[in-house]
Image (tube, rainbow, N blue to C red; front, side, top):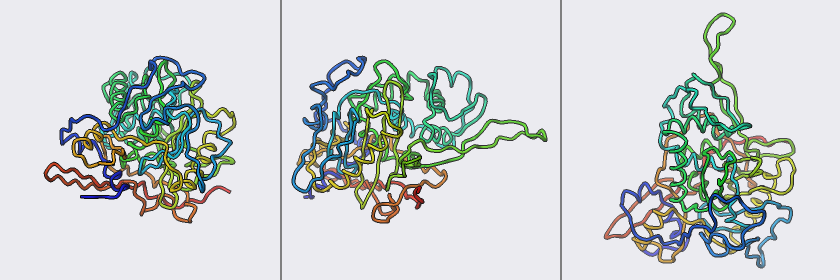
Length: 435
């Protein structure tokens, strides 16, 4: 069945849950060499002369990679990040990048991989009573949501703590539920390899600074793209505020009560801040900040039907909210350049998706499309309505009509394999932007 180029790309936006059921075992269609250098080595002060070429040869080169031509806007000059990338979330095209495969400390953006690995494992209604060992080993100065020993939390509560407050305490409790930190780290590294996020090496599941813990702007974007295919991931990542269970106490009348308290999302493009308005069309994903990593951020936003992913790592400018300001500038450029600029690379599919394409021959152009990692959860979150900012055209950002890739159609006939998948970002209610 002939299909246009874009349809061929979308046909690769698959979940490996479907692919795994087919027991696909052909060689990968996309070359995915291990990046040079030991994962235990500390990142250098300057990018290596040669980096991983996953996604395209130009992405392995140091410096800025972009195809400027007539009609393509000039990149913003005031971007100081050590590494960044702008990609089309639907097609996987990398519109522009700067040191995309430079292996750097990821900080709490690594929680995207934690969530993408563990979210499907536990029903959100499951309950867990916290014991002291669950909270052992949390690094000093960690961001916390406020989990208390001997209190019971639902899995839903814990994920709100991870996504909104970047709570290392919530990560440790969920890791304890997942047979411990060591097992969780092992599974995260395995999942990164499945996603072809080969710059990534996990040591601590919460992203806390650890020797040898690295990722890259390219990998974080791959991980975000995989996570955004899960409904619960999308909704948690775009939730601005929620109620979190407090500590059980006795009130003045001697009655046992447990009052919840409000938590806000620390993603400032989503929640806004002083001198930083909510970004038009923002819908997630995750921020981070540690001594070694500096500020890191991966975001997803929609404007006029175009959905982009931007990752920014460690801006040199030491200004308040600089990582968000630089992300916003790159988003602005991406929305103006989309459809005009020729890509410099692509976001590759997971190994299982690439194998499926190689075996079926459904992608004769040899182009790699979207992701899906196989452990796709479609359970709703059921929390307070998520919120986003109106788009530039006056629409509600990620509107009800938006789809990156959600219902699945699989046709198997005579060895032919076709997947046409669309997964919408959350429906976002209108918000009044800050003056």
